[in-house]
Length: 115
Image: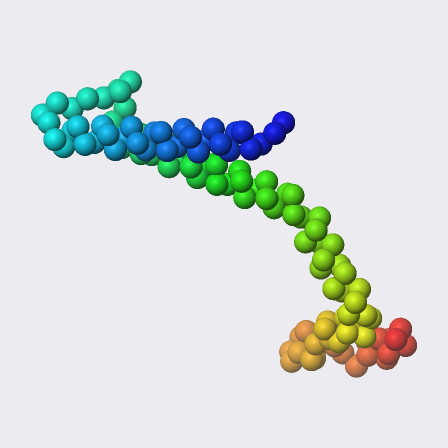
């Protein structure tokens, strides 16, 4: 199912709802008459428009991430492959920590033997 028409529809609904709310609020402020459209106030139209626009933004962002996910993951894997084994090993080496997390003397010969 194509996603772009759904995003366009949500943007259209959002901005239409915001404009109806603005027009309705202008009528409320300039006259004594307080119209409601399907019993919805200007605040209801504004909230509905904001929800539609935020949902369209979220849907567009998720679609963009899904389309570019493979390329971005491939680029990071290529960078790791170009770095080589010594660079990767140096990146993950840490200094021994003090306290209970420090490697004990009994395990250090085992690590050296595995090399």
